Length: 447
Image 1 (tube, rainbow, N blue to C red):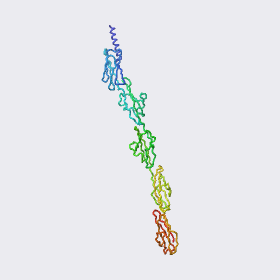
Image 2: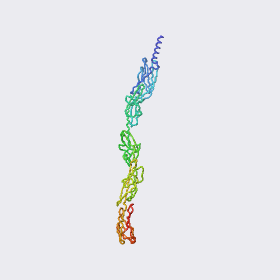
Image 3: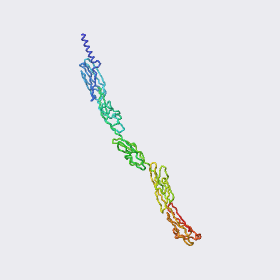
C-alpha cells in the first residue's frame, strides 16, 4: 500500500514537471503573418505530447477581441482594424491540476506595405529632384523602412535620392518587418524628368555711330546658342520691362535676351549695345571776299578729331579745322564755291559734315586811257575803260568841263583857262563802289 501511494505521487509530480517545467511550458506562443494582409495576425500556443486532455486556452488580442479553444493547441487569428502596438495575452488553464499560466507579449501591428507613387513635377537644369519628399509617397500605407534604387530588383542603390540630377526611372522600396519577423516589401517606379537648360551664347553687335539703329534680333547675336526656345528682349535682368524695339535700338546700354523652351526652361543673358556719339562739324558762316584777299573758314580745332576739306582750292590746309582761304576771280561776276568739311572722331571713326559757301567777288578795274596833248584852245576826248565788278565810273579832277557829263567814259573835256596857263590838267576816273568787300578803283590821265 505504501509503494502504491509513492507511485501515484511520483506520477503526478512527473506530469507537472512535463507541463510546467519552465513555469509556463504550454503558455509559449508563436506569431504567423502573411504579407498580403499584415493586419491579420495568427497565433499558435506551444504544446507537448504530455498535454493533459483538458486544457483551456484563452486569448486576449489587446484590441478588445478575444479567442478561446480547449485541449490541443490550435492556430487562432485576429484581424486588427488599426496598425499599432498591442499587448497579446494567452492564459492557459490546466483543469486536472487546476494550474493557470499567463503569458503576455507586446506586438507591433503594421499595415501591409502598399506604395502609391506620385512622380514629381519636371524641373529644368540645374535644379535637382528630391524623391524622398513625403509628397512622392503620399497616400501609401504601411510605410516603414523606405529605400531608393536604380533598378526594379533593388540591387543597385541610388546614391543621392534627395538630389537627382539625371532624368530616368528610379525605384522606391518600402519594407515592413511583421510581428512574426518576416520582411514584407513593395517596390514601385518613380519617373524623374529634368529638362536640359537652354544656353544662350551672346555676341555683342558691332558698335555703330549715332543715330544707329542697332538690331539685336539678328541671328548673329545668338549664334552658337543651344537648347532652342522662344527669344524675347528686355531692359532689365529680371525681365520685367520689355524692350519695345529690339530691332531698332537708338541708345547705348546693356539689354537682356531671354529664351524659353517649350518645357519652360529659361536662360537670360546680357547684350551690350554701343552707339558712338557724332562729332560736331562746323564749317563756319558763309563768307564773301574780294579776289586775292584772305578769309578764314571753319572753327576751333579739337585734338580728338581729324578734318578734311573738299575742295582744297585756295585753302592754306585741307586737314585743319579752320584753314585760311585766298582765291582769285578774274571774271566779271562773283564766283561761288561750296566747301565741305568732314569732322571725324579719331577713336571711333564717326563723322559728320558741314558746308560753307565762299563767294569771291572780282575787283573793280579802271583805265583812264593814255595821256593826251592838245592845243590851248582844243578839247580832249576821253577814253575811259572799266571792268571787273565796276558798273560805272565818273571823272574827277580838273577845273574844266565834261560833255555831256563826267559820268561818260568818253566825255569831251574842255580845259579851264587856269589849266591852259598851267600847261596841264590831271583827270581821274573813279569806279563806283561794287557791292561786297571789293573797293572802288581809280585811274588818272594827264592832259
